[in-house]
Length: 117
Length: 112
Image: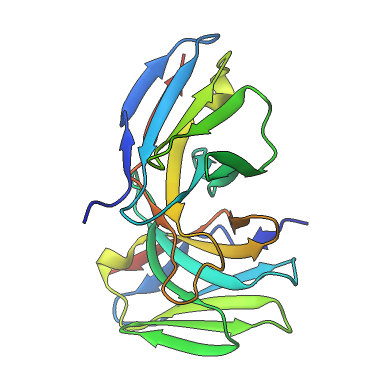
């Protein structure tokens, strides 16, 4: 049973460029959330996708956008990269509804390390 | 006020002792509570979750929840050097969508 997979694992971009990160959720999961984790910080919620729609969004600018495909996989796009966008980007998958109940837990992928120079 | 607060540490505990990690949260609508362990350079790994007041035990780990005080803790018994990591407290809030809010983590160091 494949867990959450993310690609690429590491990448380096230049300021002003655009980046696309990809995520395949755990088998059976249909909800994908994206988080940004800066060094020394906890993960910060970017947004969540369910049924190919963005259901909720954290406090991130419109430069951050996403998409969910019919097979539940998802992409995170960041435009006009800034140095401050350098972080670990985590994808998490789950079933919709109350997490922590009836075994509905949230699983993270290994993340994509983005460095902006 | 941050939604989820943790002491950043580092918390240093001798091997074999009990490590106690604490977390407070501000949203009374919070419904489930998670503890994740994160080794340096790795993604968070779920240790356990709790959603009812009281204690929940899983091996050497015990999560404690007090919703009235908006407080959740993690106890690690018989601490091992391999327990040295950052521990993230996370709170699940279900409104129009489900999302998890994380604290900034507590660094735990187990000294031999």
